Image 1: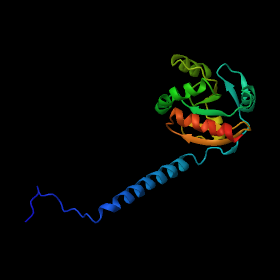
Image 2: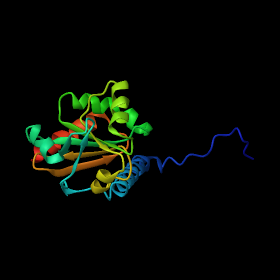
Image 3: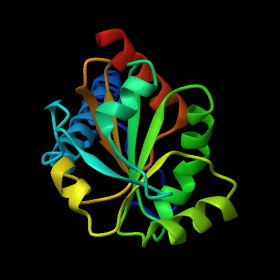
Image 4: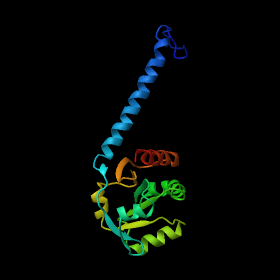
Length: 183
């Protein structure tokens, strides 16, 4: 008779198959991750960036193409965020670090008027060039329905990568590097 304290029987013949099983588990997780990513970013613009125009915090009207030309036509990050988004607040340190040495244009989606967004950025010590998208019109043109969304655009104005949700600084820098290399 077996007691509860007795160790379970172990099949030593099955042990060599464990590493293969582990790789299968990892593969399933990786496929699931990319499938979910593809699903949540399915509506975000791909190919040429649409001709978007908006107002900066100070009310100056500008097109994204004009802004890119003013940055020397380099690859850039178009970062769509909101003041009410908790994940955006966790990503802002990475965005700010990247914005210190690479072109970053941000879009404040449904976050209030320019004065409100400006006060929010100033209170957090952020100096990003920001388009005000109070009614989410720009975001809809980009196919963005969730924030944060990061759109990586090459020097020719082609979208090279898109991601939504938390993204590390190294992930941002690698995608931006890839977009710069693609142009």
